[in-house]
Amino acid sequence: MIDYRDATPADWAALDGMAQASWLETFGHSCSAEDLALYLGQAFGPAGQLRRDLSDPESRFRVALDGDVIAGFAKLTPASLDEVESGPGDRQLAQLYVLSLWQGTGVAASLMDWAIATARADGAQALFLTVWEENARALRFYARYGFVHVGDHDFPVGNQIDRDLIMRLTL
Image 1 (tube, rainbow, N blue to C red):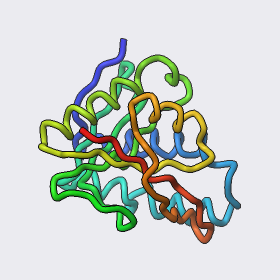
Image 2 (cartoon, rainbow, N blue to C red):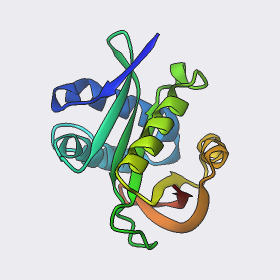
Image 3 (cartoon, rainbow, N blue to C red):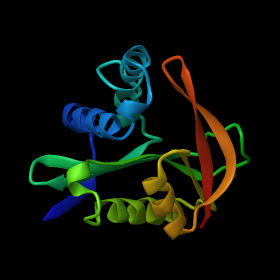
């Protein structure tokens, strides 16, 4: 059985390990070893963005737990995409990661439902996210929720620049 709860800074080590594993499962094949090392150093680890965001009161995290194992998580932040216009209370689903063992089991749907409900409760008029243009599974998932492509975003992976699609859901 999967349990859901808000994450705390005390969850950092387990969440960081899960997030790195999920990122590598999904995207590790798409860049050079050098770019991979650069990206992982910026995003994860003791000095990484994930740890900083976990301590930021503007960021909200929800974890899916299978026993003591983090199967997935969602991170909700204020909308911060320069390429598209957003309202003052709009939110961004900055990360939605689910390890492959739990994909297709409803974990991602539960986390998405939490993100939408939380954004609405916060008074957001829209929920934004970015998704790599080659992540077909995620694109299908977001389309089922009604997200639409509204712009493009350059996503640096080390020195490599990937094209992410900016998607918006009107709440």
